[in-house]
Length: 314
Image 1 (cartoon, rainbow, N blue to C red):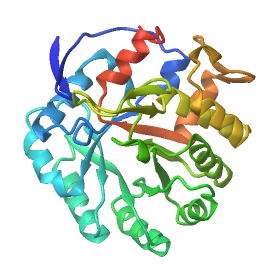
Image 2: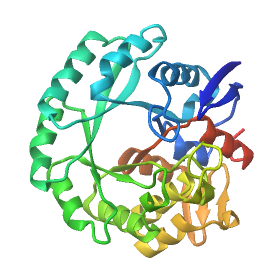
Image 3: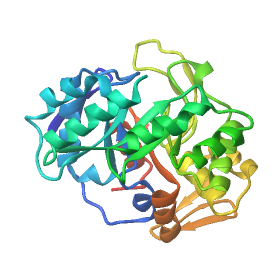
C-alpha cells in the first residue's frame, strides 16, 4: 500500500482487481492527472510521486497522461527521473505564448527521455482564431501523430470556433468549471460545444471541475469552509458526449449533463443507458477513440473512489 497526498488529504491506495465492463471501456485511460493545478495545486515532487503510485496500482486502467506546463518541463524531469519505470510515461504539455519555442522544448525532451517519457499532445488557449493554424503547425512538427488541443470558451454558439479548429486539423478543449461558481458554464453551452464537435467530427477533451462521478453540489476547493456549487460529473459528461455522437440532440445531452438523479442512469457489464439512449461497449470504445478523448482532474483518487462507492467498479 502507498500513501498519496491530494488536496492536503492522505489517501492509502489499495490494489484492486476487476474485469473489463462497459464502464471501464468508457473510462479506460480517461483521467489525465493534473495534480499541479487548483484546487489540489500540489508540488511537482508530490504530483510526480502520486502519478508513479497510480501507474503501479491496478486502478491504473483509468489513468491517462500527466499534465505539465512546457515552462516546467525541466522541473518535471528532475523530479520524475527517479520514478520512471516500465512503459514511457504519457505526457500532455500546456503550451505558452511561443509555440515555436515550446515545440523545440518538447522535441528536446522527447529525444532525451525517449525510453522514459513521451509528450504526445499539447493543450493551449488561443484568443485570435487566425493564429490556430500557425500554432498547430509548430506543434505538429514534433511528430506526425502529435495531438494539439485548442481551448475554446463555452459559447452559446460555438460553431465558428469549432469550424476553425476543424479546418486546422486539431482538436478542441473545453473548460467545464473551476474554483469559483462563475467559472462553470451552463449545461446547455457545454452540450452545444459537444454537438458542434460532433457535427464537425472534431475530437475533444474537457478539464476543470470534473473530480466527481456524477453531477451535484460539492465543495469547490479542498479548503476548510470552501464555498459549494454544482459541478458536472465526468460520467454525465461522457454519457452526454455519447448521446450527441450517436445522433441525439444537444438538448438531450444537456439533460444528461445536468442530471443529478443518478437512478436515471443504468450500468451493466455490456451497456450504459440513460432514458431511451443505450450505449454498448463497442459504442463506448469508439466514443473514446474517436470523439471524447479524456478529462483533466487534479485528483485521480477521488474519481476512482467515487466509482467504487457507486459500485460501478470493484
